[in-house]
Image (cartoon, rainbow, N blue to C red; front, side):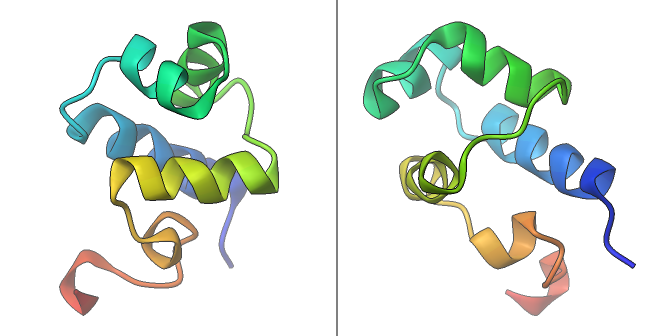
Length: 74
């Protein structure tokens, strides 16, 4: 079973590995830096539309973040 904790971990990992600051990501998504910080700490999950846009900004595979693929599947 996939858990929300696993998804939060992969989302936070993707944000950290993006090479962008939380402030830069927030500006690109037109959200607060605090929201991005909550995603990194696992306190909150983004809304579905924000998640889709976040994946695009991060150039991250949503299937990986949602634990539908492993790193080896790329």
